[in-house]
Image (tube, rainbow, N blue to C red; front, side):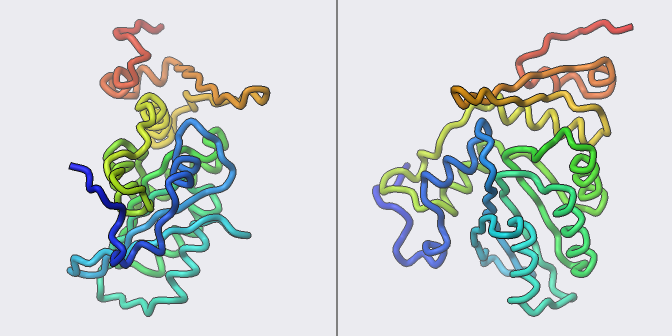
Length: 236
């Protein structure tokens, strides 16, 4: 049941929450907003206390800002495990992926899970390789789905009174398409998702282009989950 109040005034995370309109423009998978937003959680050792904060692009990408803030403000203790979860409006570019790997190599007791809304310039071979390198270094990378949107809305957004359960319901199709493309990246397959923009009406167009290699390697249930593909498919 939704509360008739917004986030509690005594909530220590309230000053670090973003406004509902910011959440909508940054985390709508249909939009191609240039700026990036990061919502993150940090948990130390066996403590049940979760420390949350938010960040946006400045002169640097949000990932670099986080790394600089984390390493400069906290005294890192190698013997204490640290769990970090990121909710990113864009996946890391190849340069940020490299910086993240460097950060984790210096802080081996840190584990990182990344949820992303969109894939940043996913046709670029360097960005694709950067994500694969992150996975090889132990980072979990996933596309945000409904449970993550709900979690972020309740914990990072200064939602209006009575709107605790009323996060924007984005069509699952876009999430599934990005998920399919991420699967292609992981398996070193060619891109299958092409995105274009009609400037006149600011419409974002998604086009799925599958090759034989996609049908041969990607498990059928993942292809069928998009609702756009019919199997079986015969290839030569």
